[in-house]
Figure 1: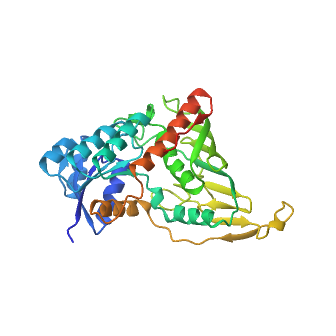
Figure 2: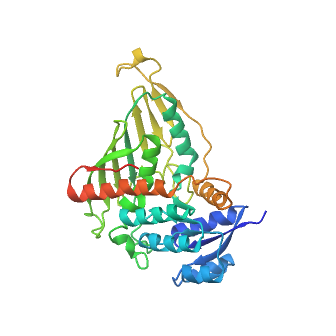
Length: 353
C-alpha cells in the first residue's frame, strides 16, 4: 500500500507531537514541514523532509495527500481556506477558528465544497472517554444529575512558553478558555450531553496578562443536568486530564486524582480512575447506606495516534471523521459562550445545530 503523505504546518509543541505520531504510523509518511520560524530548518533536516515557509509554497511545489494545521489559533481559518481551495484534506488543530464567526465561515465553506475537514480534538479518540461514555449510557448511574470537572495545572513561566514567537498566548484568544477548555467541552458533551447555557467568572490576577488565567464555570445541559468546572493554568494541582489520564507520557501522572465526577440518581463515576460508587437497588438509595464500589479496567493508549490513523483513513476514503468541522464548531460555540459570560456576568445561552 502506498503510504499517505502528510504535511505538518507549525513545528511547535503540538506540531512536533503530530510529527512523532506520523513517524510511528505504518500507513503514512511525513511529507513536508511548513514553518517560517528560525528553528524549523533544523527540525525539517532532522526529519529528512523539505521545509516551506508558507502553505502556498508547499502547494505550488508538491501537494501532499493531507495537511495538519498546528499553527497559532488566529491562522487556522485563513490557512484552512487555502487548503480547501487547493483541494487538500485538512486536520485543523483546535479551535476550528479564533472566533465563532470565523470558525463558522471555515466549516460552511468546507461543507459547500464537499471538502474533508477534521478538527484536532483528540480526546474523542481516547479509550478512557469511550469507556466513560459507555458506562453513562449503560444506565448504571441512573439519570445523570450533574458533573464536577476541573482542568487545573501550572503552565511554565520559563522555557519560553509565553515568549516570542509564542507571545500570542498572552493575548486574547490565547488563554485557557480557547486553548484548554475547548477539550473539556468536548469531554462534557460526550459524557453528559449538549450544553445549552453557561455562566462564568474569569480572572487574570495571577499572570496579569491580557488574557484570562483562571475561570470558574457553571453549565446547564439539555437533559436538565447541571455542572461546575474550574479552569486555571496558574494552579499547582494535578486535577487535569493531562496529569491523570496517563495518555501523554510527557506529563507526570497521579493515579489518585480525577478530572471529572459524573453523578446520577443511582451512583457516580470518577474519570479517569474509572471508580464507580453506586446503589444496586432503588430502596438502598440513602446517605445512611454504603455504596457498592468497583473500578472498571481499561486499556490506555494515545488518542493522538488514533487521530492520525483516522485522518489517514478519511483521506483514503476508508472512514468518516471522528471529529467533524461541525463538532469543532459546537465546541467553539460553548467556549465562545463561556468567554461572553465571563465578560458580561450574565447567563449566556448556547445555540445548537
